[in-house]
Image: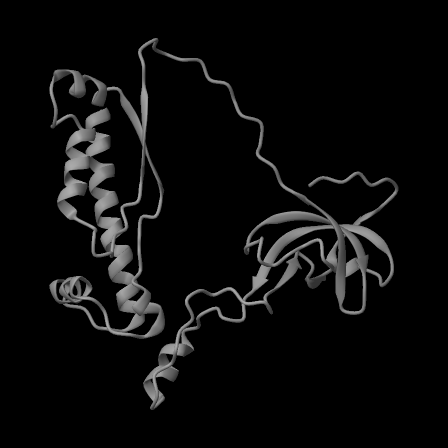
Length: 235
């Protein structure tokens, strides 16, 4: 949403005065009650009973804080919902300072910069490949299928027509759902046979940090494979 304000000053967090209407520009920080901590691993080792982990890290008590170069202030009001925003969003907030917080009446988010129109150097068709749903870490993830994808993009599969189309691919976009962390990992439960086999093949421990490294390292290896062959193919 956007707002128009006349004769309202822009001030920093340090310059806020209780009851004074103003605009503050800064970066949002989302305080999450269920956010994991490095101390959780230590507590789990010292505790006799296993710690139960939530399915997600959202909680009704999550709150937003605005910070700038001078300080930070808690945000209040019904306009800004903590469930909608994440840490790092730059915003301009219009409202009034209260006793220890800033009551938000309107919000302006930073938009996208003007796009530079570039001229086409060639009149030939060019293609962008969108890939999603790799789900690395799940039971249906198959390295062979990913290798077939790489071979298809680089023109090592198909007839001459398909290879001609592959030669016009200029970019690959990974659209999402690349990693699927087993639900048991979040609950502290046992893992399936596929995950256990992957753990044994990588010869790593069973701590949460090492398992997270396993899933994302597997994703990085496949992306590196795809990126390296794409650079060779384009050159």
